[in-house]
Image (tube, rainbow, N blue to C red; front, side):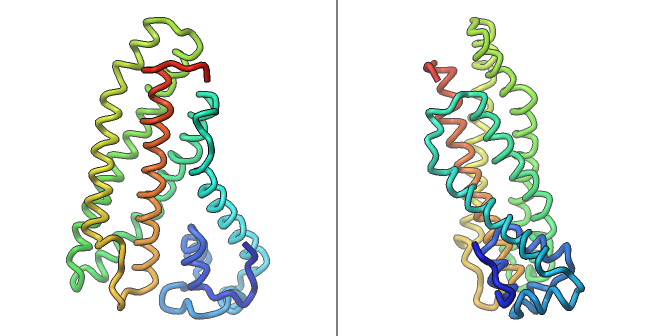
Length: 236
C-alpha cells in the first residue's frame, strides 16, 4: 500500500489495522480531527511524516500478510512450524490487541454508554474473552504445545497420552471462546455502528471484528489441523 502525504488521517485509520495506535502514540487526533491530510497532522505535532509513512506502510504490509495466511495450505506444513505460526502470528496478535484495545473499549463504554447501553455488555463480554484467551494461550504454550512437540519427536505411548489428556479441555475452551465471540457480535449489532458514532467508536468495532476473524482462523488451525495430527497421526 502506497501512502501519500495528502492521505486523510481518518481513511488511514479505517484502512490500516494498528494505525490508530500509531497516531495515538504520536498525539495525532484521528477521532475528531481526522479529516486532515497526513502531512498536516504530522507537522502540527512535529512528527517526521516520512518516518510516520514508513511505519504506516509496515503496518499495512503486516495486515496483508495476515490476510494471506488465512489461505495458506497449512495442512502441508510441519507441526513445529505450524505451532510457531500459531504462537507468533495468532497468540502474539491477541496479546497485543487485547492490551491496546482495552483502552478503546473502555473509552467508548464510558463516553457513549449512557446513550448506547449495549456498550456496557460489550465491554463486559470483551473483558471475559480477554481473561479467558490470555490464560488459554499461555497454557497452550506452557503445556500443550511442548507435549505435542515431544510426541512428534518420540512417538511413544506415554507422550501420546500426555497430549490426549489435555486436548478435550482445550477444545472445550475453544467452544466457549466461539460462544463469547458470537455473543459479542450479537450484542454489538454485527459491528454496525450508529450513524452518529465517532471515529474511535467505529475503529474499535472494526478491531473487535478483526479479533473475531483472527481467532476463528486460530481455532481452525488448532482444532482441524494441529490436534488431529495427534489423534489421527499423519506423515507431516
